[in-house]
Image (cartoon, rainbow, N blue to C red):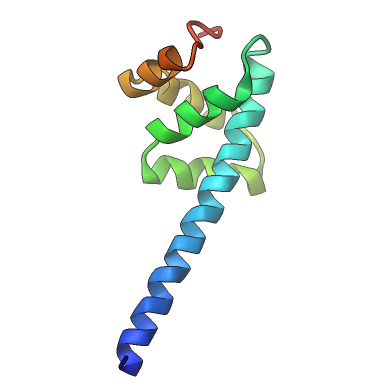
Amino acid sequence: MSPLMAVGVLALSGCGAADTVARDNAKSVVHNVVTERFPGANPAPVTDCIIDAASAGEIIQLGSAAVTGISSSTVETVVKISTRPEALTCLSRNGVIKFGI
């Protein structure tokens, strides 16, 4: 493997690690929002459905809230994502019919 190719592989693996960290941080934030905002819901499947329906930009935005703190904008983003068709399908498939929205 050439040195240039090795650098490319390392860069790609670094991006994967960064993506994983951002996704994990976003998941933690969404879990906290769901727990506080929707107390009757099982937060694990709701969180997974919301994270899976979020865009890359939203993952980054939500993940940054793990550092800066959860704001009203963070909560609005979580609620907005939860109302998307793909999130609603996931929530329905996981037995979460209605959780307070």
